Length: 187
Image 1 (cartoon, rainbow, N blue to C red):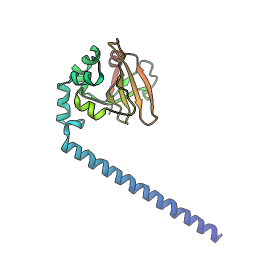
Image 2: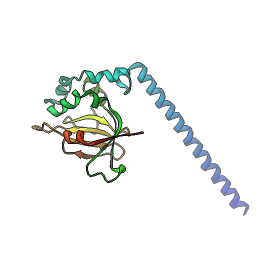
Image 3: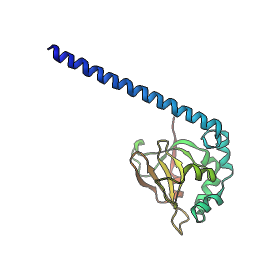
Image 4: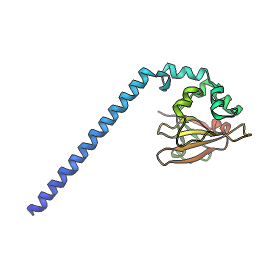
């Protein structure tokens, strides 16, 4: 009986110590993330969503830089998207696909990416996108919405790369269709 109690106490101490260790590690990681964010916000505010400097990048899309990087002209529908400042500055909303049965089927959009040279250096090269794929938004959970730029297509398909599962899904067969879907602001 005493032996079982000792084993139980030992297990409690081991599990408690491990839980405390994990809490400290999580706290330190959060503090590090916050310090990195604050440093980035201070030294490169043009790369932090929500800053005046980041917002200003939407006013001056640099299509030439993107076309040079991609090695092809941007489709007109993409230029039209980036020319719509109100849409590009929107953030933290959900998109309702026509086949959505419930809010769980909605797609989260955290923010759009500007179309300029910083977007290229911030988002390319990546290990999950090819040069024919143009990232244009994030879901806020390390997922990236991108356009599949196929030759001869003026209205590219919208796909979503899920970082946590490391897989790609076509969200809409055309950018114009994706942009026409209802939006729901999140609280």
